[in-house]
Image (cartoon, rainbow, N blue to C red; front, side, top):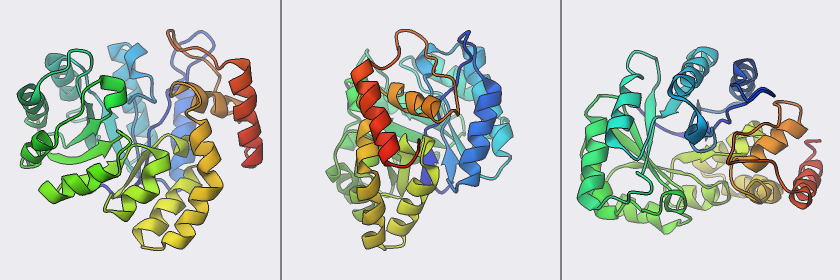
Length: 289
């Protein structure tokens, strides 16, 4: 598969009783499609995958695929810190209609380089296109460049999401291998594209899908002047969405916009009042409230 453009790391909305709100999820997916994104990424970190039961996890993916109706790509999060669990979840994707799987670096157990290579290779061997996910701030483990170089030779490993805060990693990866890189940080999307990234898996696109999509399209078309205007206009929002642990601020923002209920599952909980006021002011400044 080819990855290019804006992919929304879509939230998982909950009802007031904390059950998954599949109706609201369908509406979010349809809104995203209507506003020009190229793809959706359900049950990643932003989708609160750590607190979903396996049946919920799979139903969120199936609902996203159904609601997207083939109009955009779907990259389903099925990563885990246990290779057997990641294999089990990813196997369930076969025949489900997803375009790829997002595979996060195994967290907490911090495998060595060979362990990482074997983990990702085993998942790619299933046949589903794999997008690697490097996010050391969440996993305490960076995927070494040498491992990425080896993994790039696997025909089913198609891209890597870089969310380590380093623009240089894009150049370093491309210097070693021919692997598509997408940004995992909204604030770094534009500079990453300038050195060869193919787009973004975006948190901010949950609330401003049209603006993020247009910014990325302009940048990929080498119109960086106009793309920079959009980046500057939305930078306060990009930053505000990380005023607390993701996805707390983005779900709070969507609730303020009356698109979902503001419901989380512990250990995540609502924003502190000061942060809520800051986020609300930022949304008002962006014309979203």
